[in-house]
Image (cartoon, rainbow, N blue to C red; front, side, top):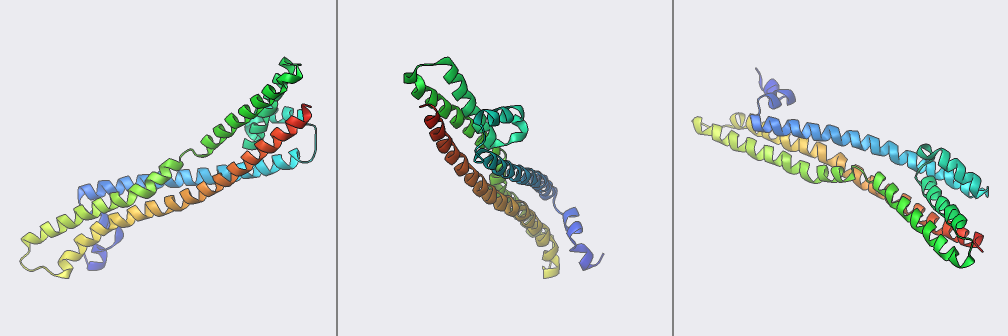
Length: 227
C-alpha cells in the first residue's frame, strides 16, 4: 500500500484507534442530527414568517375582527403563530364581554385578553426555540470531542514510536494524520451548528418583536372597542 493510499481519508479512519473511531462515529451522528434540526428549523421559521406576513395583511386590511377570529379558530394549525396569538386574545375578549355587561369590568376583560395573548406568545416562542439548545451544545462541545480524539490518537502515535529505532516523518505522519481527522470532524459538526444557531436566534428575535408589537397594538384596538 503506497503513501497516498495510507493517508487517504477512509484509510486513516479505518486504521485509527478504536476510541478515536468511536469518537468519530459519535461526531458523525451528532452532525447528522444537527443538519436534520437545521433544515427542520429553517423550514419552520420560513413558514412562520410567511404566515405572519399573510395574517398581518388580513388583519390590517380592516376586515371584521369576529370574522377573522372565526377564520383563525377554524384553521388554527395552519394559520401561523401570530394568528394563534390573535385568536387567544380575541377569544378571551369575547368570552369576557359575554360574561360581564358592567362597564366597570371592562378593564378586567382587557387584562384577561392581554394575558391570554402573552401566554400564547410565550407558547409560540417556546415552540420556535425547540432544538436551538441542541445546536448550541453541538457548537460548543463538538470541537472538544474531536480534540479528545486527536489527543488520544497523538498519544498512541508517540507510544508506537517506542518500538521504532529511528523515528522519521514518514513514521509519525500516519498516526498524526489519523488523530487530526477527529478534530476536523468535530469542527465540521460545530461550525454549521454555530452559524445556524446564531441565524435562527436572530430570526426568532425579529419575529418576537413583531409579535409583541402586535399584542400592544391589538390591545389598544380592543380598548377602543370596549368604550
